[in-house]
Structure formats: C-alpha cells, structure tokens
Image 1 (cartoon, helix red, strand yellow):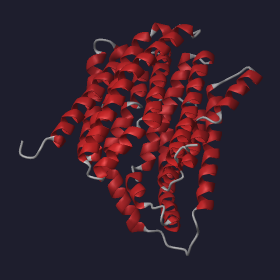
Image 2: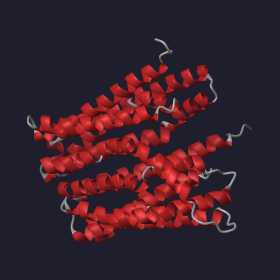
Image 3: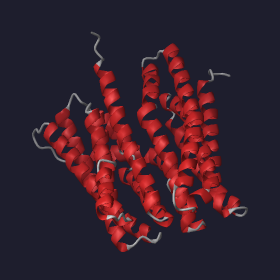
Image 4: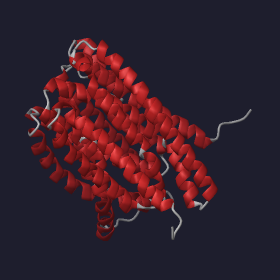
Length: 416
C-alpha cells in the first residue's frame, strides 16, 4: 500500500489546523453580529485593528533578520538568540503598552477595556514570535497550534458561556481572547524552553541585536503601510460615520479578511514556496511554471473567492436581526473589490520577492498607503459613507498596478 509522504501529511495537518482557526473566528464574528449591537461590533473591529497594528510595531520587522539567523542545526545557539530577542522586546513592550493605552482612549474605549487590550497586544505579538521561531526551526505544527490557542481555541467556550448565562458582552469576548493569548504564550514559551537545549551562559549579543534592528527598520515602513491599509481604514471610517455604519463595515471587513486569510495561509504557501525554490535553484523553466500556477490560483481566488464572499455575506446581512447590515450592503461590494485586488497583487509581489527587490516592494506599499490617505478626504466630499471603502479599493488597484509594472521591469532583459 502506498504511503503518504511526510511533507504532504504535515501540509495537510497544518492546513486543517489553520482552517479550524479561521472557521472558529468566523463563527465568533457571526455570533457577535447576532447578539451584539452593531456599535459594539464596530468597537471590536477597532480593537482587532489595533492589535494587528501593534503586533507589527512591537516586532519592528526584526524577524526579517532573525529568521535568516536561526538554524535547526544549532538549537543551543537558537536558544540564546531567542533570549536576546525577547530581552529587547521587553523594553519595546513597556514603551508600546503606554502608547497603546493613550491611543485607544482616542476611540472611546472604556478604561476597563483598555486594561484588557494593552496586555493582550503584548501577548499577541509574543505568540506570533513563538510561531515564527517554531516554524523556522522545523516545528511547523507546534507553531500553528500556538496560533490556534491564541486566536480560536477559546471561541467554543466563549459561545458556551453565552448559552449557559444568556449573556455575551464585548468585554467578555475580550477576556476570553486575553485568556487564550496567555495560554498560547505559556504553551509556546514552555515548548521552546524545554525543546531548545541549554549550554554555557553567554552575555547578550548587542551587535547581533543592532544588526537585526537595522535590517528590520529598513523594511518596517513597507510592512506597516500594507498592514495599516487594512487596519486604519476602520479607524478613519469610525470618525466619518455613525456607530451602526461602523458595525456594518466592520462585519463585512472581518468577513472579507477571513476569506483572504484562509487563502493566504492554507492555499497560497503551496504556490509561492515552489516559486522561491525554483529561483534559489536557478531553474528558469521551473520558475516560469511556478509563476503561472501562482497567477492562476490568485486569479481564481480573486474572482471565485470574491463572488462567494459577496453572496454569503449578502445572505447573512439579510438574515441578521439588526437592519443596519442590510441597509449598508453597498459597503460590502466595494470591500470585496478591494480584497480581490489585494489577492491579485500577490502575483507581481512574489516575483519581486523572489528576485530580492525589497526596496521596490517597500516603495509600492508606502505609495499605496499614501494614495489611500490622500483619496479619503477627496472622496468624502461626495459621500462620507463610501469614502473609505472606495479609497481602499483604489489603493489596492494602485498596489497591483505598481507591483505589476515593477515586476515587468525586473523580468525585462538588460539593455531593453
């Protein structure tokens, strides 16, 4: 009897765990849309966007350096690298926590919620680093489980409490999320502590940290620009529109982001990985084949995924008891267009990434975010409710166009 190769088993298991995580979070979003007021769901979206942004601010893109430095052949050395990195991060967390608290007060979050969100932001980033480290050192499934515990394993318990007590509040959801984040840190940190072998003590390697910060900060502006595009949008929307409109926008954005996240974590890695490997092997024929396959799957995801997302969320909007969702369906279709264009931008992005054209990627990302910010006040003159999603869609079109042009220039033979 034929056996399934181990890499295929790992890929299948990893994809299943990721699908479980995305599915549970989608279930939570739908449940909150049913049980909470749209204004509360809007606040939840602000919190989620803040956590996404702080994750990248806290990280300072240091992983772009550390992931190349860690080695599964030197686990004892990796233990000290992880120690040095988290020594630096403790200082970042202390400073960032204070800034986050001040930032959240500007969006009307109650002090009690802020005391939950600030430590959660720190734990969210710490678990992300544990995931990256475990994945880099070959413990892929363990790394994915870290994210499952952080983001979704607590959802069934949270929903069960609703049925037992008859009550579900935003504060309650955030407390469960905080508990999941804490358990994830304990699991991920404990696993690394037990697995990575101890050796003779070493002092903190300051030159290594400085080199990592230099590399990370060089890439940070581009990374934050793209992340902010899909985080700051909700914050600006909150300033321009009513709480009920924000709730509808947040629900549609979370739905689109769930489908996008599912594609990027469960499907896309199987297509960009061969592309990068072909480039590393200098196999032009394999590179062209991998690039065509990646383009095909992105096109299918953009068209079919966008259509399915629009249909499902339209049905859900009409089924939800609060009429605010159905009344703002026009926001959904613009958001679907934006996320579909984002999916398409992966085609030129991975060519640039494979060719190590990092500066072009940063330029495209920063230019896209700048276009988004400039477009909002212009579009708001005509319609405040659609200014943000339209600016987002046009910004994603800009991202796709810029990277496509840059990728064509990269592939053009010298002298032409």
